[in-house]
Length: 173
Image (tube, rainbow, N blue to C red; front, side, top):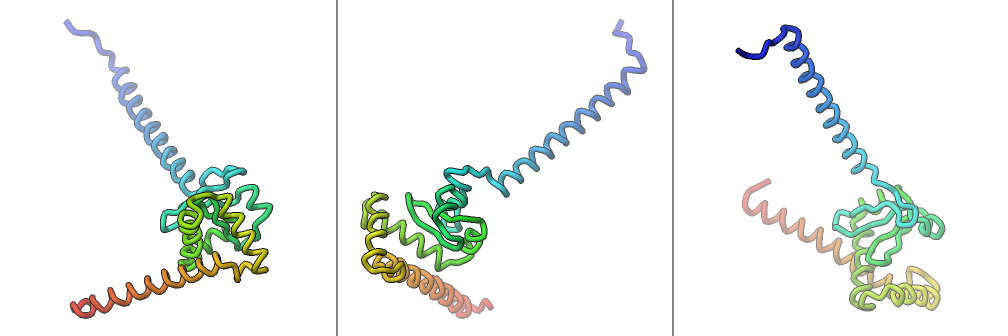
């Protein structure tokens, strides 16, 4: 003899499966939306700023408290192997400008090669050069970064030209 099954229990079981599946889809959808929200607008830390990674993989910080106080909009400062900016508008310009990114990346190379990673000596050298040469644009570290950025941009355009010529030689338009 088996257990007696009532006719009313079968629709209730299928109804539970329906609701369970519906809740599972709702949970999954809310998790997808939550993931999308956090990747588009990361959490902002007032002291450290919002973390972004530029196309070459260098960490950038936007909107840290000290940048809001001391940097003008449209400026970037390289320190502690990061590029610091005041606002999102500056980040948008920076992320689209290859020359500007190459310039700031060369400051990181200068920090490692000339100052062996010592941030205090690196920043003091900039302050001293700005005072001595009475200009941002005439400071030797800035001129060196400008030359490096020019060479990088020129090499990128030369490589794209060479690649196009090679493709033309093969017969690919």
